[in-house]
Image (tube, rainbow, N blue to C red; front, top):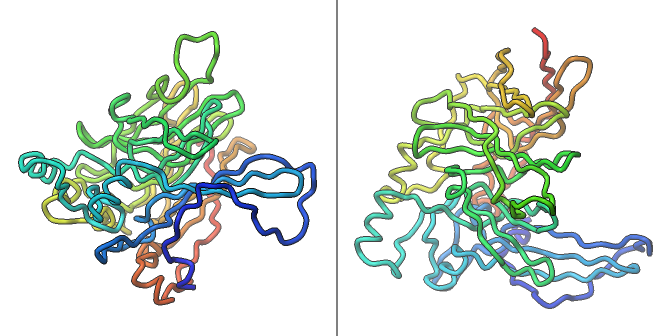
Length: 356
């Protein structure tokens, strides 16, 4: 299994893929995929965690029973710095940041005291907004990608647009064309935000992409010095579902990460005595349902499905008893074949009555 986690190189020129079986002639299109793929660099440096690897995007072109495949590392600021100084200058999930030698002494010192710059190593998801292709992770940086050659075209910083520091890598596009996402801010108080992007219209003066995004509503964090880690959220015909789980990002520790040398993972606190809180928000008004929903503590990455049925919101969650699974993905374990399936997720269904 350890061979799966070796660094790979990009293949920017399309190559014929080997196919087992037959692809029907009527199947045509392009498939884009994204993930971490390079953890090892010159001078003996390697990342610590699988989620730290440099983002590699794949493009599969399917036509007349054939598949062409190409891949390219996203030419992000994080990747440019990595290839230049062989160390990450941004804090990654499991690896601390290193001083940027391209900055002067004052800038390096200030960056350690106030670590405002977040990584743009967008490994988590690729999606369409309007007719444009984007790569994203869980920070404020979103890259527009040229679908032809996979080059990075433009970086959007939603912190500059909406004062939102973090955003989910799994936005939802609804049938009417409206796109929603979940974000968080921590510089002026700890709050979660539901972001809304109305359908693009050629008759509108607003541009394509995230420039027309707005905040539908904001929710204060239950905790004063930490906020819940999230990776996804749920959307139904009328509601948005956000789960405030007790895996917490400690903002005091995060603020000291530059000086203390913490990775993001080392800024997490697991509080199993704290309930998981379910926030149900009206998609039109942005008002939160007054009924308070909560369950015993669990950890999760993904919503499987969320829908309405007979006056209830039904949420299917891929739930873990705790966040131990995050420790399983350190490369020191993966490359020794020590990954164990001892913490498998459980398909868990929650049924929330809309009328208490």
